[in-house]
Length: 175
Image 1 (cartoon, one colour):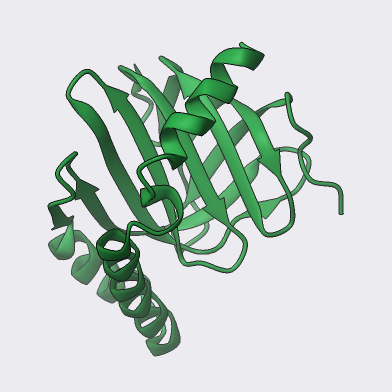
Image 2 (image 1 turned 30 degrees about the vertical axis):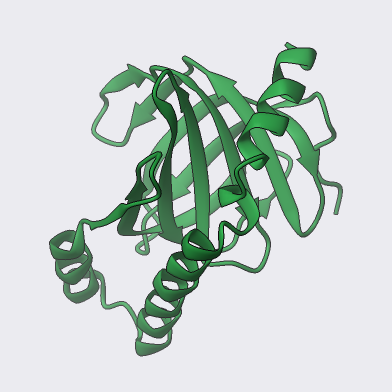
């Protein structure tokens, strides 16, 4: 399988457990694309929701996807520092059409001082019942929450203070 090459613009699609399309992000520029990791950048891109709404992101962002981790991380470059938004979901799949993953509702919002909030626990609980998340999936998601918390505390991967800055500089070079 070929992975998106550096400098290519791709679409990102998230799905729900029942197979329905959840959200589409247009025009993410690939900064690194391997079977293990994909790093992309975007700025003020159009996002389409499954309910027909569309909106535009407000700031530049660096997106991190891992081929074995049950989460992805978006580092948003704002005037007061880097804000992070983490989606709990399956590892990514690349199929030449788009980068795809299943979104499992839970999110972690991280502030520049590295404090964070776990979001959408009620939505996770509701969808777990409605869509019948298997016990194996529930365990994977709970393990991923703990792993993300560990990465945040350790400033590991995309939470390394230099990660977003370095990839954002590279994004600006390509743009």
